Image (cartoon, rainbow, N blue to C red):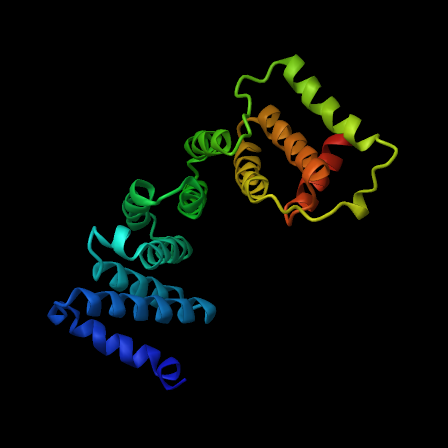
Length: 238
């Protein structure tokens, strides 16, 4: 459409006069256009421009927008957190995430914000803080990860994977795709912990490898399963 072709010019000029927009419906329309322009910028890998569009859209919202225009508001905050992470603006990201974590209607709607927070902590080398936040999220996803790894816990976790792999009917190449959204989210946050713990807690790192491999066998293959099985293979020959 003509608007899509000219979206950058239209939204940029509109934002210059955004303080003059007083009608609440018009402000939401303008916020929606900023979301569209930001998403188009993301597709073009213009991350700084995308972040500016998303933040401009957020500035047009009111606190009541979380109730009156929930999907628009959540979409802007989700997209902004992604763009801010990619551009490395972690200080602005840490401030931004307070609103969606406080106002999102469900735990599932907070997962994208949690994901970008964990990624920013990892990128800032705050591995232990990121790991503890992942544990809280995983517990809400039904995956309790032990923090005090005893010899018995380590053995039991390793044996669980071995028993699953030794089933006669098991064919890794024929496993179905993972479809349970909670298990897919759990795999994502386990992978975060796996990447963060290799430098300071190898026992916990191995527990995450075992859990991810077990989840893949029991609930299907995700895009992270191959990494889990590769890490398990590395553990077997270590």
